[in-house]
Length: 486
Image 1 (cartoon, rainbow, N blue to C red):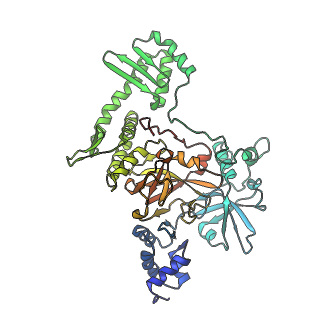
Image 2 (image 1 turned 120 degrees about the vertical axis):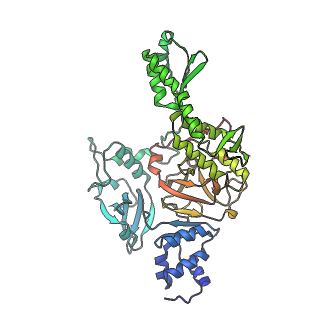
Image 3 (image 1 turned 60 degrees about the vertical axis):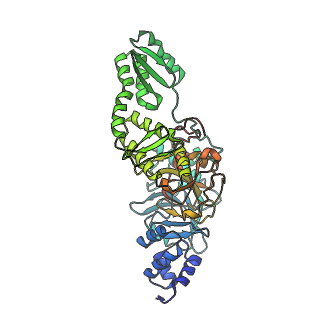
């Protein structure tokens, strides 16, 4: 071991030749102990959290960029994903498509491809079993690209329960004797040209024909009724009882009850909102604050802060109260609590406005669930160096992120709402779901209705490419939880 090498020289070696290597492989490559590598990483990586994460997992791989971005991928993360095409061997003459991945058993299923110029036969080959460890050890293993046709067809086959990716043979024939790729292969060229559904409004109105049939019995109702394509309201003295399309099944059942003249059931369904509102008030008192007149007011009397865009929070709270979702209410509380740790008051206002998009979720920890489109091998689409495969943590110094919201494209780590990813999607991309703490957000540029975030840290938590291609994730272009302004 060359443990007498200076840390400064070792840092230079790591930056030059250590990209994408684990600490174990770095130690072997540079002839030093793993402990020495860990010490050098603390100097080499610009973000202390990244160095700590790498030190805790000696098998983690680390990649960096010249502008201070760091990606750390845990040792247990899958080395490949469904739809990946790889080649390996002395001459790169072995080519295969990954058809399934099992992170529990640490196994991959691959089919051999004989002709890389054509992917129309990829479902015809027997599946070979490969462990993560053996896969990583293949010589000259190179990522060729991603086969979107296969992902699209596989998702369709799974929906129809037509083919199990773990079957011994990767062949599926329907009654007509055609495989899924032949049936669906010509339907997907790119996301912009396909028949992917775009959800302009997350809550849909009731069909006029259905409503017209139901309102035919209104004259028989013992209550005063007001009905539209989005709501049914009973006016009973001073009481106003309403059920709306936001309530999903409840609204559908109310429509059916009105159509059948079941007025007692209709009254009960319309009363649900006010009953749940009482429960909601009990729940919201558990939060450490209240929202009054555009201010977040701390319950302990320590002060108040004005936040713009609070309509989006109030609308989410209303939606949770309607459905009796106490966990959702508490998640919003944690979100506000973390947001108040953000050092920039102006960005606090922008973040509150960002969650107007319905496809932007807030998880139980109060973190924001967003999206990022990446290259087929999970590398970022700008530097092509930062690994974003599920499980990765990506960091950079906050001071290096451009806070100017008038700069549309600038220095920083980027995540977005789906409406932004949709506009830039192409057939060579993947879509990953990401998670970030509200305090780590630095800027939300004005372009594209504020659907893009610049941050100093995020986690990649899942590959949702197949769900996106199969129209399983609604895209909210308008900002459903907004007050109607972009």
